[in-house]
Figure 1 (tube, each protein chain N blue to C red):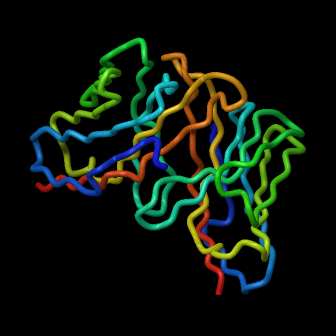
Figure 2 (tube, each protein chain N blue to C red):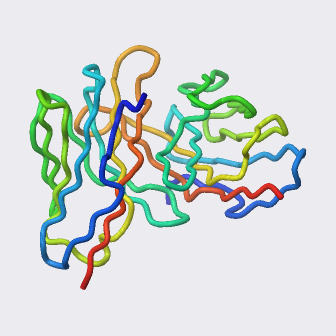
Length: 115
Length: 115
């Protein structure tokens, strides 16, 4: 049973427009959420994170929104650039007990930004 | 220059052979992880270690083994018991991030192909 779901396998946007990537989770014990960006044949790179005590975190062109009641988070990229084309993974963790620091990943969304 | 190194980048083995993938980090992180990624899939946790001389099974540990004799090193052995070993293998280590949760940092990955 997937605890972290990214229901859109792919997304295509025009350069300069907004990209919105969505992620849903089922485990109410998750209290920390992260987004990673991954190019083919490379390791994921950390983009941005948010704690469950917040509903928004912003870092340059990247903003993550968290809606705890809906168990939903989204990553906004504004403006989108061709170099943003990659697979984006949503991840969540519950920072308690023996699993502290372990991440549960979604299956990823492939973003294509067209010039 | 701190980071996580994985070697080799590409590895080919014959069916029935054990193979060991290397992972080294000089970030002074306590926790280390091994994942595998298959096409269209997210990252699935194989093993993790939160401290030297201790490690735990992840979601798909069958057919794999690890050791953690040094803080810097977390090698993964893919044994002949692993039924479908061809995959992209990622090593990670983690630290507590500014937002309070743990962020994982990934190596560049090893593509293992079993012929």
